[in-house]
Length: 206
Image (cartoon, rainbow, N blue to C red; front, top):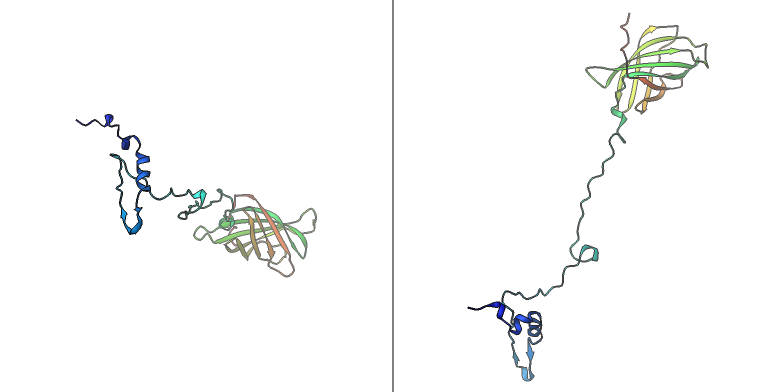
């Protein structure tokens, strides 16, 4: 029986050197155009080494281009969230300017239950420490809120001290700040801050 462990041939003891010797002697070119072919000899269960050099790693350059897929960047929850979808329901308090001077303003806004773009509001005005001569009163408004823009038109008086009803054209600056202009040439800007999420619709018209 043949025992590979007892095989002490040069080929088995020096497989790499044997392959290199075969590569050096092939082909042998002689004068007169003749040539001889030296057969390669490989040890049992051995394969000739690959002729090509190892492929360079991506860091070494060369080779096929690799495209690294980068996960899409996502903003943190709540950060950059569009305020255009903010529910305006609540009580907002601030001031507005009109011909009587700076006047206190409380704006109570509710969304229509059947159409969230439709809103109803109560406009309450009153004196401020800077303008104690302003009168108090209130009236109802209806309008629309879309893409961060609020447009309110006068509807009916609730308590009229002899004033004229005026609409509003405003923008939602952040979740709790509304600013804009009063809908009259004799009036100026308004600004209100949400102080509560509680709100009731305007009382029914008498």
